[in-house]
Image (cartoon, rainbow, N blue to C red; front, side):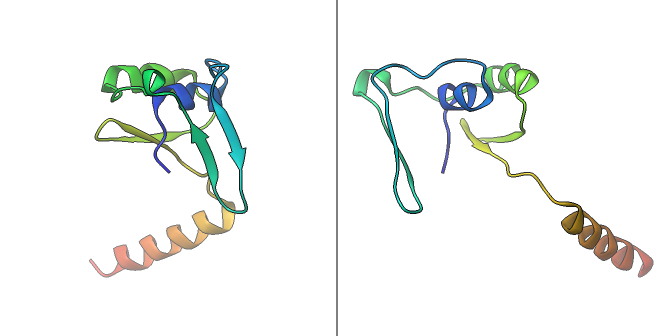
Amino acid sequence: MPTRLNDLETLHGVGSAPENREVRSTHRTLVVTMSAAEQPGFVTVEEYLAAEEKAATKSEYKDGWIRAMSGSILRHNDIAGNCFASLHAWQ
């Protein structure tokens, strides 16, 4: 689910969520509602980079949207590294 800068700051502890924002979790979906006046605009690259420097977790930026990235596990890194090494050997 795309995340705007205000949500990224809240997730990473940089800012705080507005009082009138309703956040509720359903079975598999996180629902966040905001008033029309509170809808944030697109995030600039500079805003993203400034927030990313302070962030505890990583995220990606694409077309003004910020998406939180999940962390990888050691097993995934081992498998990806082995695949890369096997493909590199074909050169």
